Length: 394
Image 1: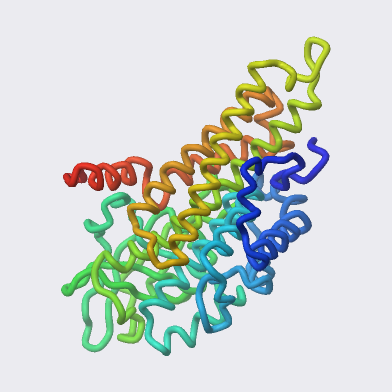
Image 2: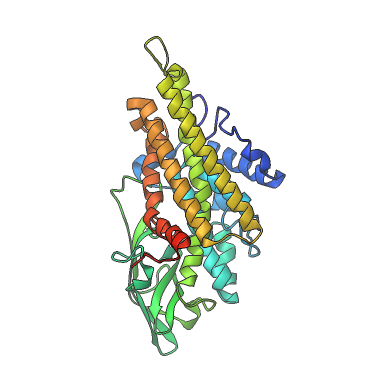
């Protein structure tokens, strides 16, 4: 095993001194989250991954640290800047993508639409409890037959007097079976609208998805709505159309851009540590040219991903970040992280497939991150349209 907890670099992996560009507050977030994961998560994460669970009691602990909805203002939220949020995502995902998913789904996909588009009553009811981790949220957009094309969603909400009747299904929903509130997007006569569906609503059921080989330390579920009766006040009043859910996804994708650099860093750190200590043919394998070549390219990929994350973070601070830029960052950084994880696995050899080391866990997790919140292909088409002016989605 490495001499230091996985995810916390024991070597100089910041050759370009990217972290020197962080403010004192941003560096404090880095150090606080890194210390939390070292004490509370890393001793247990391999067991949680193997068991296919993530303890719910982590939510209030994350809330006490101010990490839930940390980039939002008011209602008990920390009101931190985009880079601070990104750094937190990086350090969380250096521990495990499932942990970062819990935080980013809570803050960017469940809290953000309430904060951005909700009524004062909806905000007062849910946001303080969610910021504290007392209530967990989920985001219902993807369906069994509609993933990359959410405009074709089959879930419907129809008016029933002053109320609504919601019917349909959602799939691959992080936090779904433990959530206290679900933000659900549905077709209506006036366009796609968001609805807040509380746990226990009659006709609302959830089922945890098991037998996953990726994101095992994360709760994933199916949601089913059978004429769920919702009051008029359950609808998010501030947005109509795909702009609502897509704006939430842009927020969450920003966290992914940062988060995967943490997973990549953990894999590179484990590979360097292993290469320096594992001996074959009379010397450490890190002394062979092929191994050093792999490590050098892994460092180059990580450095580029870190620079992209920081640059996009500063653009977001300035209010200049576009969805197309987020697509570039998500596509590029996830691909870089997967390549680093795969190369790290080859350096660790057979040890690379055990949970004694973090590499295979990160590699498996990143296969999900590649797909969710916009597949690589969808982001490529977004960039292709930017370059050519021709949409290629249909």
